[in-house]
Image 1 (cartoon, rainbow, N blue to C red):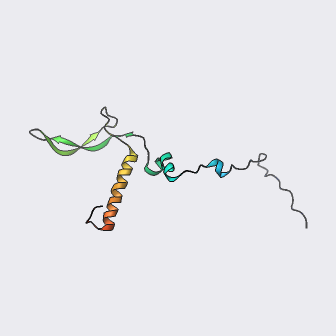
Image 2 (tube, one colour; image 1 turned 135 degrees about the horizontal axis):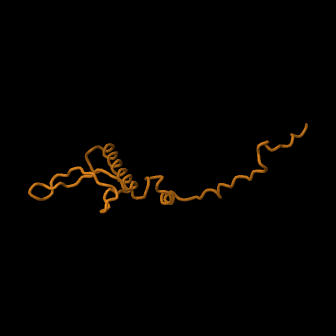
Image 3 (cartoon, rainbow, N blue to C red; image 1 turned 120 degrees about the horizontal axis):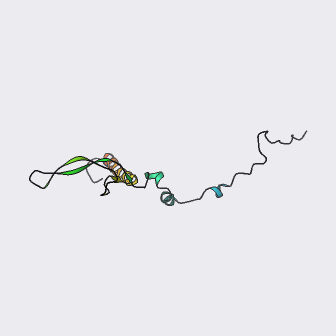
Length: 114
């Protein structure tokens, strides 16, 4: 038997290529809780406050004084009073609570506490 021919570098290679780093050097092992705290945007979305124009409900003045019914009004984002801003992550957490409560009611019947 003849020994195999020596390996030649690919004609387009530029010398020797260093071996890739070991997984321990590239990645860090963290617990699930640490992972959520390190990268919250992966789970609940952006955590920075956003200011946008949005619709909200405001109490309309009733004839004769006092608060009347709630009516929709446009709130300009970044207003002087800070209105129009929200945290998308907080909205996502609130939405998840509502969805889980509705799922629980649907699963267990509409009778008892969610």
